[in-house]
Length: 89
Image 1 (tube, rainbow, N blue to C red):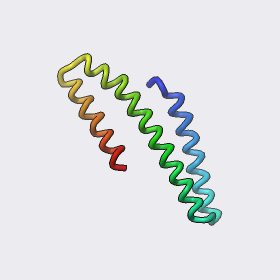
Image 2: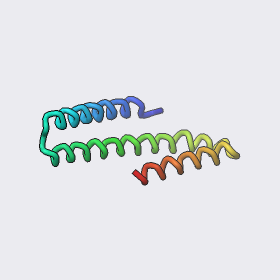
Image 3: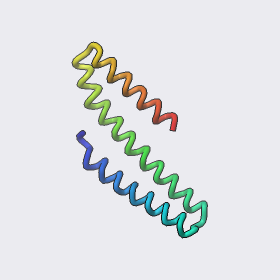
Image 4: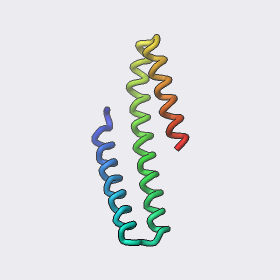
C-alpha cells in the first residue's frame, strides 16, 4: 500500500476526533455541536475510504487486469462491491 503512512496518520486523527466526540457527550455538550463533529468524522472516514479505493484500483485491480482471466474478474467484482458499500453508506 503506497499511501499507508498517510492513511494511518489520517486514521489516528479520526481516532482523536472520536475520542473528542465521546468526551463532548460525557460532558453534556450541546447536541448540535456533537452532531457537527460526528459529521466531520464521517467525512474524514469517507476520505480515507476513497484513498484506499483509489490505491486498490491503481495497484491491485490494475495488476490483476494484466494477469487476465478469473483473477481480473474477481478483482473487478471485489472493487465493484466495495464501491457499492461506499455509495450505500
